[in-house]
Figure 1 (cartoon, rainbow, N blue to C red):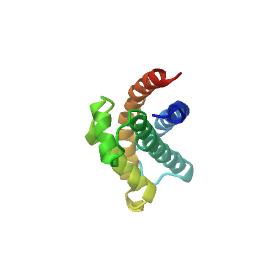
Figure 2: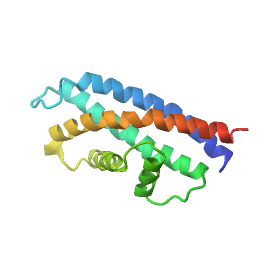
Figure 3: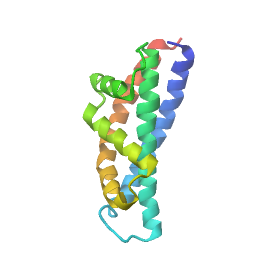
Length: 151
């Protein structure tokens, strides 16, 4: 455990909170758009913002926050799957849900399925609420960890 990691975790939590608020905002703005086709560009832009914000929050949690908590707790790094399973053991989320979130994030990031975007928007909309449920649990435990190791 290093003091630098504890401070970095503190900073990342600020970004996590902001990212969650942005995703919540996009969810509200996109509720009536889910499942619609032939949308005008300004409405498609809202859906694209939703998917981008979903992917960002997923990355912040799984790639950065989960990893930092592991490093502070002196847990060996392992794979993304290992981090996800430890998150489940910590009571933050169901591992299978986190795997779905991660896979969807990868699909968004690589834009493999342009013809399936309506379906992707719908799944993002459904999984975003699950992703947002993880944030307060992680934030609570991360603050406890910061308090434990702060001087």
